Image 1 (cartoon, one colour):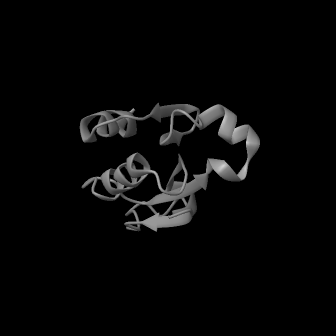
Image 2: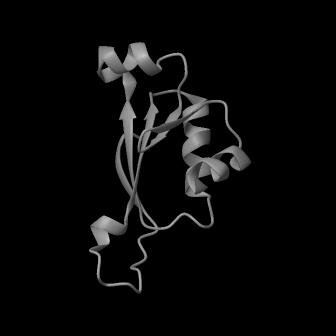
Length: 99
């Protein structure tokens, strides 16, 4: 589950920007054997209007600083400087992604 996932890559009609610049970058802080993390990933992949996404799934157990920061709140979805911590619903996720 951990690593990079490129989801729904659909090129834009505006070719003045490169495709990489158009991609939304998200980080999902997670860990192995976490049912809430799996649910969060399923919610993300099921979002109907989520296009051109680079999703990095990061295992917080691999870094002591990340484990300290996110360990009790995972899964945490990060977009830019904003974070959405568990538990969250599809509606919460939709609001977060549209901000």
